Image (cartoon, rainbow, N blue to C red; front, top):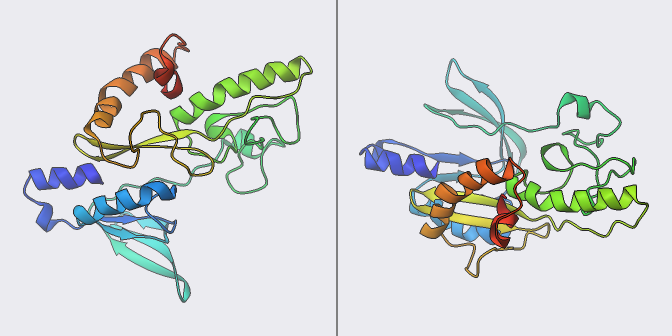
Amino acid sequence: MYLADETFRRNGVREKTHLSYCTAIGKIFGVPAFVPALTKVVERKAIQLKVQHNLKAIHAADKVAVFEVSGENGLEELAMPYDMIHVTPPMSAPDTVKQSPLAVASPGGWVDVNQYTTQHNRYPNVFSLGDASSLPTSKTAAAIRGEAPVLVENLFAHMNQQELVASYNGYSCCPLITGYGKVILAEFDYDGKPDPSFPLNPTQERSSMWGLKRHILPWIYWNRMLKGGEHEGQLVRRFFS
């Protein structure tokens, strides 16, 4: 959305374009500390923010999106025409997990684990992390990098009949690209508190974080994380080694 705004401006068509951001939750971002800065961005870019708008259907032939809107009068249905739409669909665990005894009873069917130890709440010899787990944090590569050492340590402890002492604090990272050359590096924990890797205000747009997101993190992901590398410095290990 933010990059689309800048692209439209560079091509002289922004004044002819209407941009809307529709989210099912009640604010622009789930972690309160980053809401004021992101609200300023959408205001600066003249992007219309629509909260409590839950996408229910898309009629592609007619280019109409249907939302369930929560308001003072309860739930109402709203049809919104579009020329281009970018959608993040609802996510869930794979059917093999969702339909197994490992799954939570709630929608999503995630592997039912303790949010701190990553151990299953009913089957002590089962551990889970990442996209299929019920860990209540963003499902990002940075989150998995924080979860993995905890899972490994606790798995070995369980195998050796020892107490599980490693604990995951919910650390996750969402690099929010607010424009070409600008990123808010949103790092936070389970409590929604900023958990920055740098001695900088993490709620501010920074060109340095754009460099990190654009050039450094992709290299680390493909060359270190996917290969199981453990030879980088503390910052790299925290992100994507």
